[in-house]
Length: 409
Figure 1 (cartoon, rainbow, N blue to C red):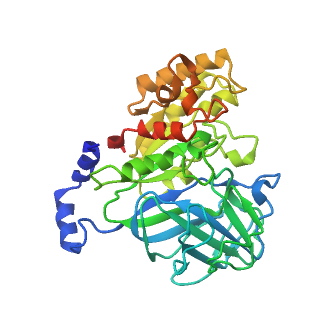
Figure 2: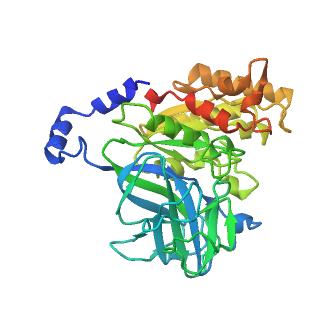
Figure 3: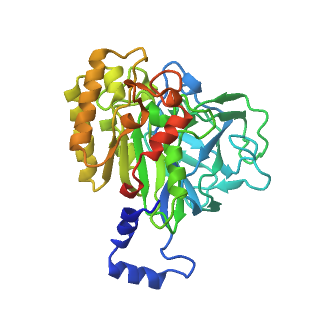
């Protein structure tokens, strides 16, 4: 598909800037390399019930996490967050490597590279409530590839900052295994990420990132574990697979299962309300230029809020994001008849909210139109249903990604 608006966005750079850039840029690329987000996740406070070991944390242990990039880059860095921790923590050793197979903790021999901090230090302290960036690393990152980030925690971390439903297995090891390519010998494996908030790359073609601010539908709930079948993954694949590529954005999935626009969940790992997440999960990301909002269904089906509260929350999200100069796309609310919380009254509210989105939002991703059964519009199409009648399966997630207008990104 030709992406005219994305090309126009690139051409909107002033002639003066282009001349200066051309003079300063080697012949190897049209634009100088710039930092772009290639992978990201939203973190929350630890679970009070120690879900995935999040409350106890790690002591003299290593955690190997597998992430999937969106855009490619010449250099890379990681972003670590102790935003929800209870104390300063120490990362004693950190590395990145290439998994030998998709989702595997076994790494390709010779692929492991050491990450450093603050100008070459192997270790770093992350103070309570803060983040750190690693030093830039000469590590060519392919698009749509898996990386294994291993973090060693020599002293007790206490409660972690973590992502509950990662749909990706992370592996826990005793001692410092950051430079060990072997994946065997793990003492535990959890479907969560810990302290790792993002992977940035330098790119000569990517101009910024797209943040998906969503709930469990974006988080990939019920998609294939370790399969990278979340709809933002499929969106990244569409972007990378569609020419021309000048201006291709990275895609950051900041979805949180159970997240709502106006309420914090009773279960801590669903996160604070989306209106309070903007600073950390949108503005705090690298090179953000556009945001896709996929939220509201939990305000309806969990909290039972009326249409005007959901609409008011969406209006605020859009207004605040646009005030920062970001382009905003909003997803309609998908069907969910058959899910335990569905009622006929809530179906009326869903349709009211969708009518507002279609009628008043400038840029819409019509997820409802994609997922609904034409013969029963309050239900998910059977071929898209993961089995719980609210979350799309792998095929349904790909269909949602296919409905995103790439030229608006």
